[in-house]
Length: 295
Image 1 (cartoon, one colour):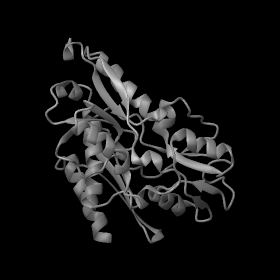
Image 2: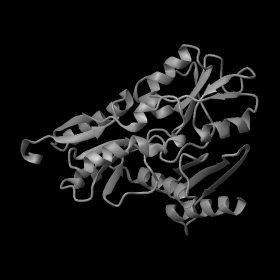
Image 3: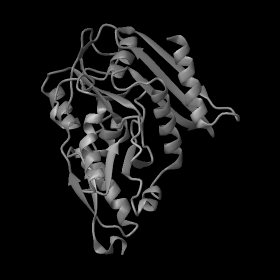
């Protein structure tokens, strides 16, 4: 029996979605004969309710405390939503990517889809990327800062604090909350790594071979390209930036966007597919070079 009967400790945030993801990893490890227990860790990001993350230091606020527990070996692995992780890697860690189910953003509103919404509709989102993409399609809508976990956002919508919210479709599907009657897929470029669950561990972790046994290779190719694009532009959640990579008929394709913090009306888009001479990293580099040429 692996770990000689000792349970491996999985660190995670305490939201319903985070726990669902940690339990998914726990169940996958059980298939290898590895018993695991889940350790809930409160992060600074969980304490910030309605302010934009970028005004407090960015997405790393969801990760730092958990990574510290890894470094202190109080936990063995950590489970994250990849989009919450910095693209600037810490050399102490390795991570694997589980198969992505969906990357999409969803508009949730009882007033209809994006193009049916009345003028002046209040949309709750602090994401600069989402605001920039939606504004490009509907300049007459109003944006309201809105943070919190998925349940919190849904409650604020039902309580009438906002008329619509924008969230990741993956979370809705995982918690069995997606309802096609008032939830609408958005045709916008998603955040790098959106919809991907990442398992993080120390480089010297004794059983990391089992972590890699859970990984989906195509998801890694896509997620690494998305993160490479963001990193090439030296960007973070302080920027309206997005990247989505996927395989289409065997070809590696990528769509990216770049907005401007001080000018919501200005946004750049670029899409390309690899030919036989380009690998996924080179596609990401080409996309970043194109955007840089337009700045």
